Amino acid sequence: MQKSVIITAGGQGKRMGSDLPKQFLVLGGKPVLVHTLELFYKYDPNIEIILTLPNEWRGYWETVIDKYYCRVPHIVVNGGEERYHSIQNALKRCSGSYIAVHDGVRPFVSFETLDRCFSALNEYEAVVPVLKLKESLRQKHETSTNAVDRSNYRLVHTPQCFQAEVLRMAYEQTYHEHVTDDACLVEEIGYEVHLVESNEENIKLTTQFDFLIAEIIVQRSKK
Image 1 (cartoon, rainbow, N blue to C red):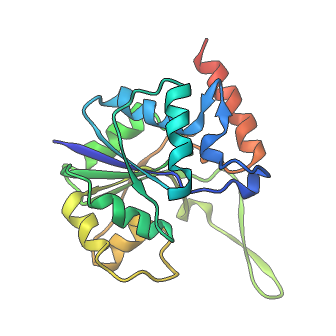
Image 2 (image 1 turned 180 degrees about the vertical axis):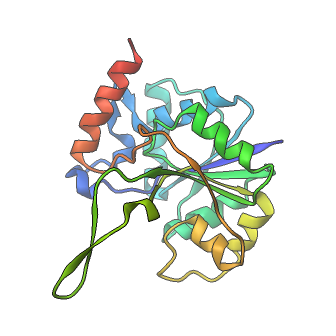
């Protein structure tokens, strides 16, 4: 079954305190986004990779490809005003029967997680990798808080994976501010989301602390 993956790379790096978007920051000798593309290519050399980038950073990406000798086949499409619009643009270029949507700043998703996601699409229309919570949770109210059962909650990771026709139908809906991810759009058109286990290293690199952890992961992978 032909697979497509949309890799979103529209972050601006504000929480990193950097003028350079976080997807371009160097990690273990090469930019984060290069790590992510290479990971999917190593997983499946035949996977169709669609990369969404803000138009103003496409030229910079070309210099990155040359400098770091990134030869992973991929198609670049313009990012939109919101992530929602970027995915809409990318869907026009996807030809796979299965479509995954992945954060460009998650360079450590494991092959095992990817296998669980794509294998589950043989039975389900929408699949999302998640992790159980380890910390206790409290719900905040206006003047008080209360403990909640953490076993009822999961941390949501990517890639969120879908049968192509389902994701396309979901993105025919009008954008609204409560769109948080692809799975919620699919739920809005009546499909259930199946959960599979993610890997703990599949972190989203957002803060400087995340990058400290990422450097450790990269160094351990070289041993």
